[in-house]
Length: 315
Image 1 (cartoon, rainbow, N blue to C red):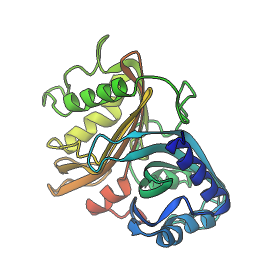
Image 2 (tube, rainbow, N blue to C red; image 1 turned 90 degrees about the horizontal axis):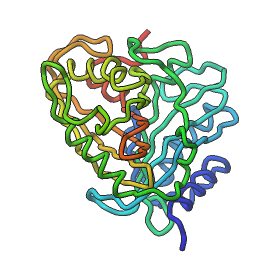
Image 3 (cartoon, rainbow, N blue to C red; image 1 turned 135 degrees about the vertical axis):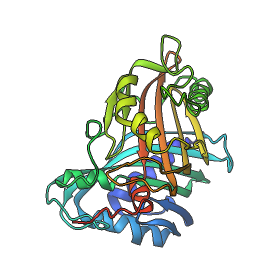
């Protein structure tokens, strides 16, 4: 039986190595990170996303950290793949407003693909322009956590995983998301997140986008991300996901946008003004022994920043 995950991964490898785009359906629907946004059709995706990236990165390679898939339990259903990857090469030409470093760069991306009859019919990609700018010597946001290149899973088994209980993994993540949504306004704590029987392992690692960075253990996660985020957006509502999948010990969820909120405290170096905002989100999880061990998070902070009135490329 053909494995749709392998079909999609092989087709994407051929696309980026050789420029062969047959893995994309002719009328593929692509939602891409700011400033590209929605693009429709194989030719438009090639001209808007693929060719500029190949032109900007000399010797471009695609290096997947994880690639897995499953049946989507959210509307619109279907079989979906989820991937965290880096586009790697010498950054020698401008890309979507970012001036090149003329040195090696890693453009991280979170990706979701709907696969039908051996082709990708829908795709959503968050690439991390703020982190690319950081690698070029200019981080547009104040520093929070530790900025690193995303690592592969500690178990090194995230590429077309085999074994594990997909339902139990996704159930664990869904329970965490349900309880994380509610929090004590005094302490910022949510039910059941930590402890021996909590959703998160004591030695959890949370890998965040440019502007948040990576942190270690729940305390580090609260300090570098959860605390500042809840202070800025205490009324945030999340979980508006088009896709939730489990695959063995891995799960992924994404919303476009996932969150709605109002801006109530300074954030990303900008002054709060109470305006309504939305946030595009992708989360990828590795679980073991009924706890979350690692979480890779891609947020479209380019889109959020422009909603907040910021100019990512201002001098």
